[in-house]
Image 1: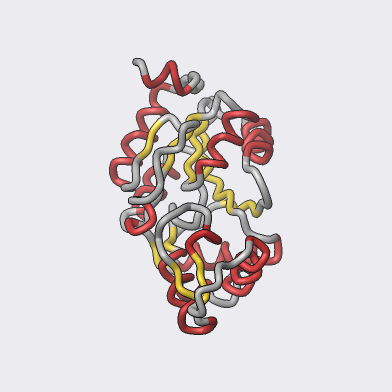
Image 2: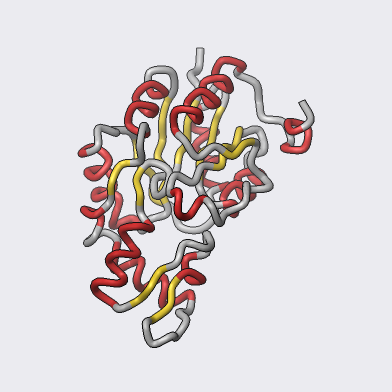
Length: 215
């Protein structure tokens, strides 16, 4: 019998990123970061008052990964939840980092006690999620991510996958509305673990979000 499959993001789901990114921007680049949007460029402004472009934001991100990854810290209860879920299901960490950061991410997570397959990706996550579902042929799949755009991408490419919207950074979560394409919004791993386990037990494909919301 096939096992369930959990596909989870990493930054702001398993490990904190933006709080440490913000510290580094201020210390090294005199860029201030406010926690108002999931679109990082909108949160960044030079101390001269100048806003940053998307290209400049990505340049800073490439400077943070992998050299500053040692700053990142584990999200509360993530280690314990992933350990428990990993006893029931296959687990894949699908992270939007460039491929040269893959080894750094594996080592980072292993240091926190999370040792599962890591897949690096660029762009929407729907295609990679669909490919992983085809590869594992699971009894049921749950996808966890902090960005609404990825939930929409998965809904478009793999609609049978359950989608849990999780933003584990409290300063960021307050300014991010629940993803319209997600089946649930839970920002805590203890509650999130229970929700995921319920999906594993039922072993049913995900319905359209609208239908799930009315049950």
